[in-house]
Image (cartoon, rainbow, N blue to C red):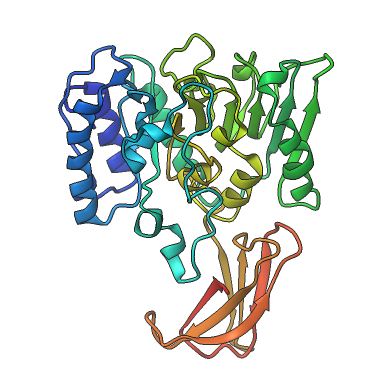
Length: 389
């Protein structure tokens, strides 16, 4: 938080309370931002060093920024600068490819929760901004509430993917049509692809239960007519969407105002490299399999140097699982969405939480994204775990 910004402090205090963030995990800065959109590298580096010292002491894996301006450090987004440090390699010069991150579509490791510890493994601390309107924390407070309301709900809303007449901003259409939607053709999520490239409605209007909405326009009309489910993700590929709270195009803050829980946009001219914007195939796969939105969203962008993620980072609609137990037959059941088609999983058992672990089942797979139920018969041990092989 920025102690010189009362709105930043109010948002931080609300989030600390809402998500039970330990006091030692709070980083307090004090700088005068005013209406500045850009922070110099000279001002940023000492702040980053201060944050990193606290992060190292507390073992932190991600950051949440509770101010809305500045949103840049020189040519980088301030989010990516906090995530990996300032580096001009993450900037266009202009209209060039930038540095890629190994966190893109990262499947992690098989050792329990270590798969989600991107800092420990890859030295990337995913960072999200809880942006809001000037002098008013209301949008941020509502976003926090939606994030909490989304947890473990296994929502069944609709996802919308638009190809518009704006061909330069609709370059993700082939990913939408030929990769994302076919991945979910057999269930798991309900998705709709709309091809309006030759004309017709360019945007969604008066839709209910919107879970995903991905667009390609400089400014997307009618977004406030739709009803978004808690945990909903929406973004539009354009040059300056990541400029918050306002932009010469449509700021991604408009998505949070409309009811989405997270969004993404670039803070400087990126040109329309698809690798600088979210890959929806990657995003939906990681999000559905139980990762919080900050992790799933970050993994969906290969070149995030100029991109800003905003929203409630710990929203996790598919984070839970269900277990069942029959004492008479000693049968254990586990229902979860965490399994990815094409990967192999195993179930282990142990007498204590720390082991020693013994493999009970192996070569477990699913043919499609689904809420799968696994069964262990003759379950005698106190602890069981599901993991990737």
